[in-house]
Length: 104
Image (cartoon, rainbow, N blue to C red; front, side, top):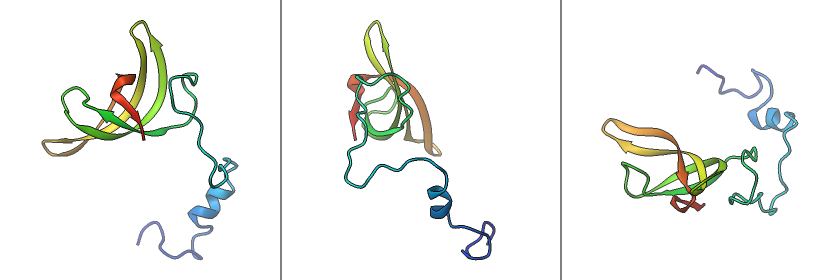
């Protein structure tokens, strides 16, 4: 199979490469940084959230909160989320008001 299913043949495993990447991994049990609007915009960490009734897609959808910004009307979150489209899942990226986002 392309990409290698055999660990020893193509070098280090994905876990080994990730460990050597230099990206710090938070200790088990340590809470992640706050994802609320109190953090500065562009905190550098995507964070799971629930998107509540976005335009054209009523319901609750899983999303990834990318960053916050403050506008005249209040806080907005930039999120990526999927909804069901006519031909399957559709990826949406949008700025939504903070009251449409719930911490996941």
